[in-house]
Length: 312
Image (cartoon, rainbow, N blue to C red):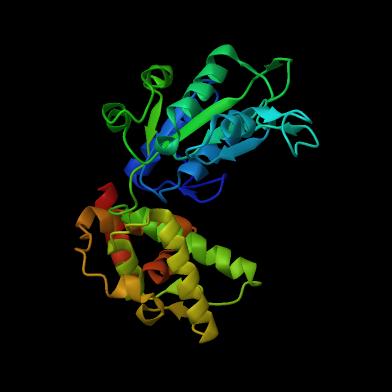
């Protein structure tokens, strides 16, 4: 069984959908092939890319580059760097992203925003394993893992002409889809407490330690259009308000209006999800049914009932 809280940041894998993505990342991490991570904005593609880098055991750095439309010269400079005197104002040698990621991982974010020229440069570096700095003459050997990210599926990128066909075939089937946060109730609960722990640690262990049951249920049934990035912000805001009031728990009144007043349909909690939440709480609480019941605001007997029906 995978550890639900993994080492490279807030990679929380409790739900079956997220476990599948993380398990695939673990299997593919040691391979030198380029990967494509697909998921909505804010879902954690950068965190998963960093996790893949850590699990790959590559000795070099993790270097992230954002997408965007760039001129040919700026593109070359960003990816390959330049020599001193390569252009007006270039007073010293600057290493590009590929060189900084040597023996490490280069994370190319927002792939659909990259021009075909930028994608071609990435493809050329992948194929030839060589780069040349702007204004330079010497070819430099390249050894870095490239992880690409997109908020659109691979097929959509190809059909809209946003992805070079040669780069598409270079990626092949090495694609990891990260599910949206909506509907992943157990992951929402685990992440909420993870971010709560982070906030308390940053302030010397002060502030609320639990969520009120109605506040937690609001969080796990919310549709999270901003995914994990939005959830982190919501928990930090709610913890701040509760800490200012010296409250022991985060209640509904501490949640932001954007969550409380949202009229979008809430994600229902079926019996299977409630059982999964109980199992998560029991594990987090060190197999104490009383502490698990506090996490979810349930009676300890309810925790036992859910655990029995889950294993029966």
